Image (cartoon, rainbow, N blue to C red; front, top):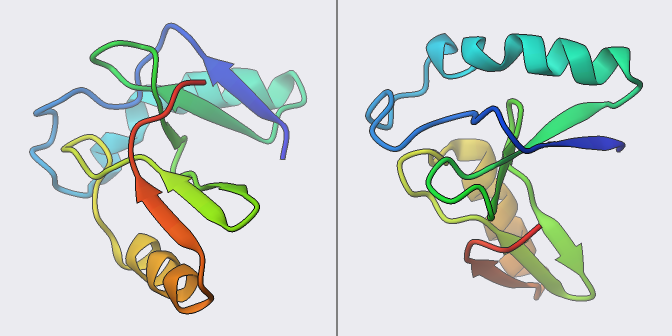
Length: 107
């Protein structure tokens, strides 16, 4: 993947849709995604709204950073929402003896 890191537009804000998965979660970033794709990127990586320092999510999906047998994922916190795909990947990773760390991480 070729990710564009967005430094100005925030994908989600704390308290936004109150933890509800909805199309309204994604419509505010539509132009950012279009711009990134026009420049040859496959997706947009968004930083957290509170500080703009931590990796949060791609445009419409969780992000998992894998190094050796460790998988880093941002925690569910109101802007990163829990979901069955996320849960399934974590369960499979643990079953395959990966160490899964739910923690914000710097870009």
